[in-house]
Length: 118
Image (tube, rainbow, N blue to C red; front, side, top):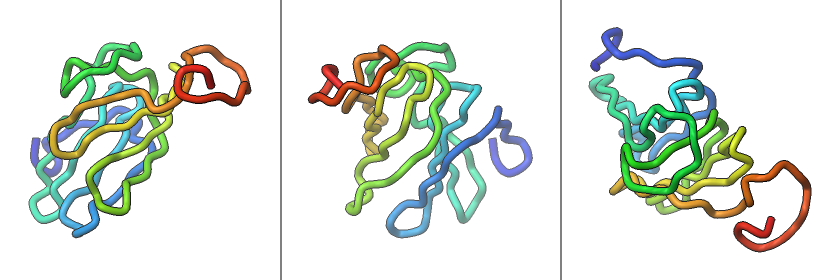
């Protein structure tokens, strides 16, 4: 939707595009990553099916489990976020909505490691 026609469910964590034209946010209880066009207020879903899970995928084929906290890469091509209850750090490609798991096994803990061994 646009402006007040859009709805969110506990947005938590935001990042602004490098050119300032778009705001990205973790829509925590909707389990989605949303994009807001700053000039118009138009809201779209970049990634996330709305179903709780931790599947990697593109757009609505990806799943999140209470995502929050977000950073954007210096070139603006990728978002990085904590996927809270899946216990993973996720990467979202801004251009395509492709979601991959950067680190985390999905198990609660504090082990150091690489990728899903962390």
